[in-house]
Every structure is written in C-alpha cells, then in structure tokens.
Image (cartoon, rainbow, N blue to C red; front, side):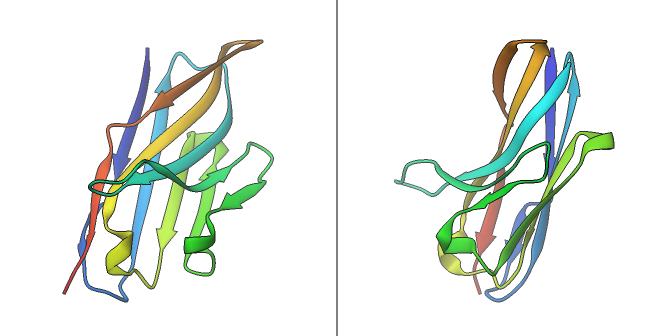
Length: 120
C-alpha cells in the first residue's frame, strides 16, 4: 500500500552531523505533512520536526538552531539535517507521513525507524 524508506542513521560523536532521509511511495494521492519523531529508551515518542506541503516548519525547541528539515515534493522525500549532535539526541528516529489516499481521506503512516546514537 504505502512504503516509507528511512536511511541515514548511525553512530556519531558529539558535535557531529547526520542526515536522515525518508522516501514515500505507494498508493498516495497527495502528501500533506511529513515529519520526524524520536523515541529514546524509557521515554515517550516526541516530535522533532514537521514540514507541510507548503513549506511551513515546526521544530522542537530542543533542536532549534541545530536541526533543519526540508522536503523534495517531486520525490516525496523528507530530510532531517542534524548538526551539533548531543548524547541526548540518541534515539530511534521515525518518519511520519500525513497523506491522502484519495481526496478527502486523510491517513497517517509511520516508518520503521532508524537508530541515531551520539557517543564518544
């Protein structure tokens, strides 16, 4: 039906950078909002950043000034550029898609998650 392929996670030292990407495909009429959430061990899943089809961006306070979200509408892909990474950024990062299967039918879909570990 719908596929979300995430990539770009890994192990990085504090202060380093990573770029996550998430590509959507399948039975999609149009995409509304794409975003990234994260879940650290023992904690609830939290919003990191979202971007609408029109380019409006919402960033968590904890990542402002360090993370940037962008999207390529032609490729149905969203990116998360993460700079100045900190150990507290360690988490599984999930891509979330808000889309229309058909006009007027809004749906949500989660990616499988990609691990980001910030450690020396």
